[in-house]
Length: 308
Image 1 (cartoon, rainbow, N blue to C red):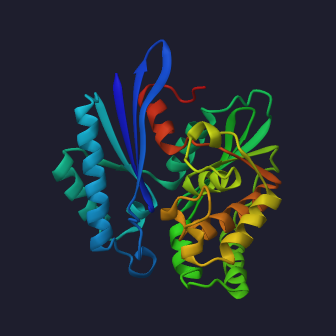
Image 2 (cartoon, rainbow, N blue to C red):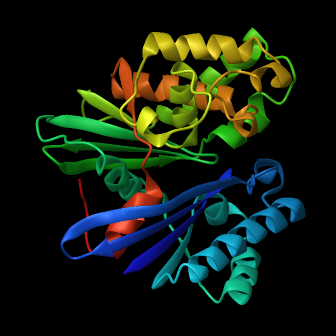
């Protein structure tokens, strides 16, 4: 059976095509991404703006067409933070359904957190790790899941993501120390109402922001998923990258080896959220997973909650 998952995020649309069978784990056939910035301006207006609307609908439609060409038996479309909060999210979903004939499932923050957790863990053997957490930093929200002995203990979704954080604190060409301090104070305010159940032995980072940070750390000229999977980012490396991003304008950031130029505008915000989330979880390093929400949905569709 061939399954297709399309994940409509606040900053990007991700497309996963995989073949599944009873006797084997899913085989990934395609894993693509399109930066559409659906949540652009959403923080100020509460609406998906027309340009972002058209870009994202177009990207999803292209992925649906590709899935059908590849004879997908089932195509599943999900939406996250932007479609949870935009006042015109219903209009977006209706137009998409009319165009593709597929209904979009809008995930709650907790559903997104749990599915991302299982997707990320599918790439690791954690049988010898008692306590761990996942940190999923998206464009519009951040999800944290804590687990002990393989079971989820708590899951939280915070309304702070790299795209919206950039628009609020880092919209100027030059970032000041004051901007960084304001951003850090905001993160403290956002996280202070939730108490982590325990400090973790291991934190796993999910999403385009931490993947980009791993690619920068490894100075990857070309993105190769297996080169990123399992990369460890120390708190010192996270601090180093924040310093690098905050002292360069957008044009200079786009020339950083390993950094996707389309993420150059939001990477500083993403790195700041990574830093604070690590402190929140009580860990001094984060291990990067190139898998995430789309893989969690894949395993759910295939009847597997968690697969190695």
